[in-house]
Image (cartoon, rainbow, N blue to C red; front, side, top):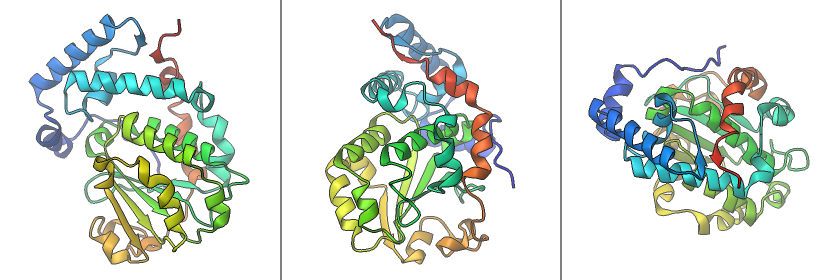
Length: 286
């Protein structure tokens, strides 16, 4: 089983989608990179790399509108400053135990029918908040997104998240808080340079309403339109991701998941230098 990063340049299918959905033409790429580089160089409060490939990370989700990409970079810097206690110099090794021993986050080893990465978050009985806090889950999600943005095709195709609430009880609900909800949604909606295409909620019991009440006030319209609630109705999930591309755990035709974060944690270590570099970017300290 391989969890190799797909860092090769975008293939023909990705390039076609990028042109159609992201305005990624030769001219727009050239102008976008030049303008964004100029905006960064002229701003004396921000420090970021100005390499072409690095700037594409921000230009792609902003459809090559340089000013929008620049605003995104500023929001990311502000978010990290505001939550520096969680993200300052964060490295994969800081959450090694949570990744390798607690099976809360998983990434399917294959992409879906639209070539999107699929991440599964176990929010129900699998999660023990006394061993892994909600803030740690946020740190893990943050580290995984740093992996995803290293893949040019993932920058284009985007990602999908399955939130599995199987066995949710008051134990997990007590591990959540409105402040966590706000931080998580601030990250996803304002400070994440990734195309989050869909979020699927599955196997959620009635108690889930308590969780949703906590999150709902902070969900903006754009994200709300990409959220789908399925309960135990797996055919409803298959309307978005066909059974051919899902494991048996979700009524799919692929083998049941027999791997966990422990299997792909070593892949995170291969990009440690990139994460270390990322940690140096942001607002320049006065």
